[in-house]
Image (tube, rainbow, N blue to C red; front, side, top):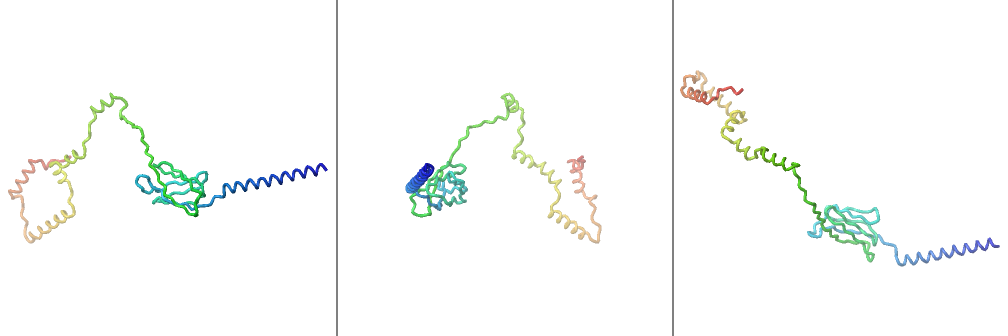
Amino acid sequence: MRYWLKYLILVVIAIGAFLMGRNLHGEENEEHPPRRVIQFSGLVLTGDSLKPVPFANIWVKNTGRGTVTDYQGFFSIAVRERDTLRFSSIGFKEVYYTVPDTLTSRRYSAVQMMTKDTVHLPETVIYPWPTREQFRYAFLNTEIPDDDYDRAMRNLERAEMKERLEKMPLDGYSAYRHSVDQHAQRLYYAGQRPPMRIFDPLAWAEFFRAWREGRFKRSD
């Protein structure tokens, strides 16, 4: 008899606990109804110039879900009511946005502004020499190389240009003209002996002038 009494008491306690739990669960559901799924879309823009923020990260807080804005700053993600979204991008301050729970539609759109995060780094001075004495010695004894203007003026000197011109090979047009002139000279003296410049006083004058100028000296 006592065994059945204990069993009956345990059954009554279990039924009471079950009914109480259902009542509490019903009250919680009335206070916090199930959250609906919302298709949240929008644009992420800069706060100062209203330019799009491309490839900004959007994460739903306390979940592993998120998305990234496209090149025009547009995004679209499925969220629940009362979800908190974190917007972040390099060079901008993080922004948090909570989806409202008073929506009448399952689609919601918004424009999120982001403020630039300017970071000022402390000034850093780099010295190429560890001591003042080494800097003074290098400053007084280092030979400063010529700049582009000095090198250009040196290459444009008359003697330098003349030497480069004498060593420069003929281009296509000059080689063609030289070949044509030689061919025309052979045709001009066809059938007769060409004149010998050994008896030409002008040729001798040109020879002596070249000799005085040192044109026949060996370059090696």
